[in-house]
Image (cartoon, rainbow, N blue to C red; front, top):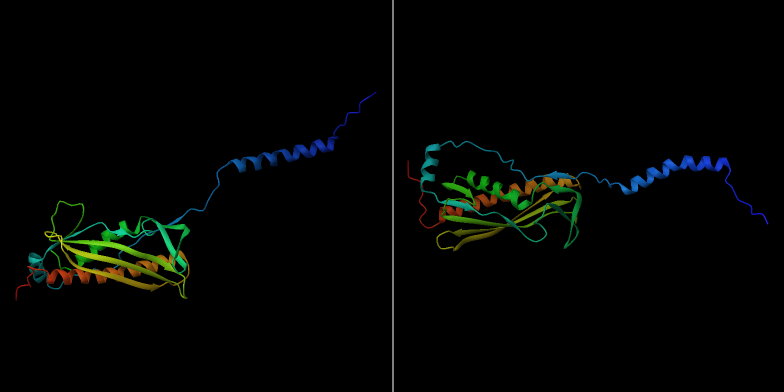
Length: 229
């Protein structure tokens, strides 16, 4: 009894040979790395205008009797202590943009901005950031409660909320505390517009924080008014 052996005709072999490179490429792509879009990085900046004092001698006299302020590193509430840019589409539900991030955590970016803003008020002899060898008369502690892009209404807006405590260094007594908040509309509903609005909100809060610290310094025990001309 003879067995019949099936064979593949040459045209079929030619088709398989033509498909082989395609199969090889697809297999390599499946095993290779998956490329994802590069993230965009943003920063909190201080765009306030600096002005030159018209009476440097009077300012020097004030500084000679003004207290020294030590600024502690700012902290952030849970959910806002990372580089993720947070947003809300529904109340109480935080989400974050997938390919848009802060270049550092908001708290670490905010601390030097606080130092610059309070120093510009001219109400303190010196404003230093910890860790430092300088022993100050007062200490400023801050916490970011919210920094979020809200899509709850049109137009969208960015909300920045900061809590601040002024502490007397010698007694560790809380001299004053306040919660600051600024809400700024975004020009469009995208991460970049939210970052721009967020920087405006931060600057508004820093202006209020600077005034708050200056008023507390003037009303602190032992504070003296500048000498009369």
